Length: 160
View 1: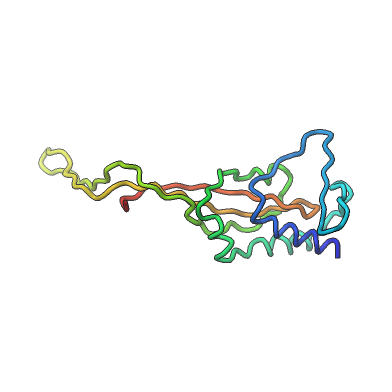
View 2: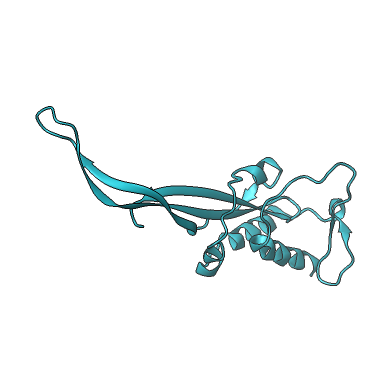
């Protein structure tokens, strides 16, 4: 039962963990599940490959709500930070969700090459807009603890 609680805690942390990092040296790592007493992380049982695979499969189910929960708050890219910190079993990447969109105040124009040695011909196409999108994946270590990675992407269009 304790192992299932940790798995559920790891999946629940999917939406609340912004990044992961190592604790400072000498700092005891503890984990509390529900009303149970905290346990030193080093005392947690190691999960089998099948248990880790089950966690990864669950974390790879990205419903529309979990993706849209990112809207309005862009997370900085930290791709591979979890993997490089020992969280080597990762779920799939979610779909991208728009987390920010704003007009830049710059003019958009569409240009065509000129003929007969003339310069290009350009016409006004609107105002430039910058849109940023996030996606995420959850990675696990061999003790079932989770770490979330984010990827931030941006592009410009003429939709302002």
